[in-house]
Length: 331
Image (cartoon, rainbow, N blue to C red; front, top):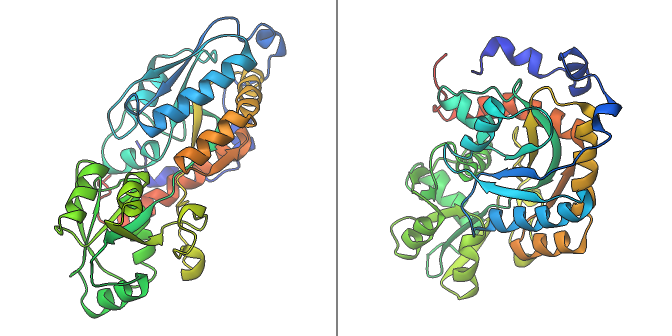
């Protein structure tokens, strides 16, 4: 459970926190034979989707580095938290079970009671990649660009509608984190998923949609138009589309929504280093570079210390963002 009284503790430097936690004193001897059997890598998304494709490419390259199988196990649900929560509750901290961790582990405990605490229950191993979110509209919409949309939103607050996969999702947070500092108010219309968002936008049922690569095919087919990248690291795919750089918007949360790998709490730092170094070699491969380009994802590598520090910063940042939206649960 995330509480306000814990906020200062989360903001301590990651290195200091590591020294305070029991059971994490380096033991090189214990890591000498690691890994000696297959590693299970939990993925929180459905088989065959972009994130699953990415994780399987990474796992395949990591297998070559470690000399053992890296088995991807799909464990869905809970906005991407069932997998890491199950790992945190049941896996031994021996490095043989690790998990994808992303936005959900920071947002879900703020919105509802959770079985895990992102500040206590994970060992953050390595930052991998992130997502770029794009605002788009129907090709024949009357607004030509983001400037015209801003003018309309300022003149008629709450009139324009936009869609995301749901309250507290990465796309919802990204859109509102841009609208808020600009003084803009839109009406949020949640959908079950990105494909439903795109269909509703093309059907004229909503004005704007905020999503990732699911909208690229209809933009390329001339059915929709991109108007804004909700990131300061835009894709070269639509290079002429403005991003947060042009808007000079700053957000307390990282709008590239980095994700990475984590294990259960209490892992031996020597084993964490082996895992980090192995996956970093996999990230340095041509295959990894190619899949990032194919999926239009940025490289958001962070070492263990940086990824831990990032996670601690995001805990407080997401709470502030969700409280502002009125969807944080009461303590």
